[in-house]
Image (cartoon, rainbow, N blue to C red; front, side):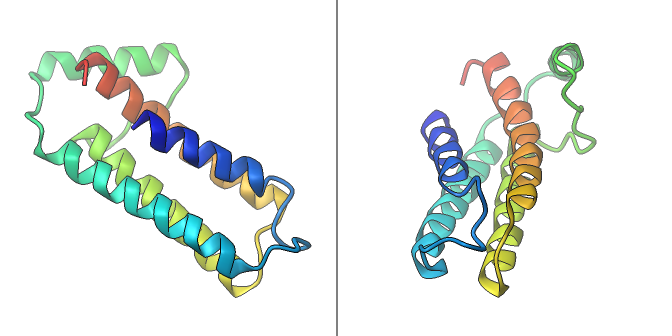
Length: 131
């Protein structure tokens, strides 16, 4: 998960000023979008096949998220799996906007912030479980 996180942040850094005036064509970025979406889909599947922790541990994880001012996921199905799926969904929406026209710097910051929240949720959960 750490490598995918780094790759995702590198991708955001590469397009941080927006794609509207970029000399790079969408077809080049499409490869990065597809790779990242596939990686986070795979991480979501891996998260789902692991045993679910005891209910008391979820309360401790929630407390840690609250201490860090990170929103607590409403869906406690398997927190890291839900977060990974939401990352993938957000990237797919961003890719769709980019393919239709472009994404400006503000939109990219908004996507990055949203995805960062999901990453914090997943990493906090996985760290508590030492996975």
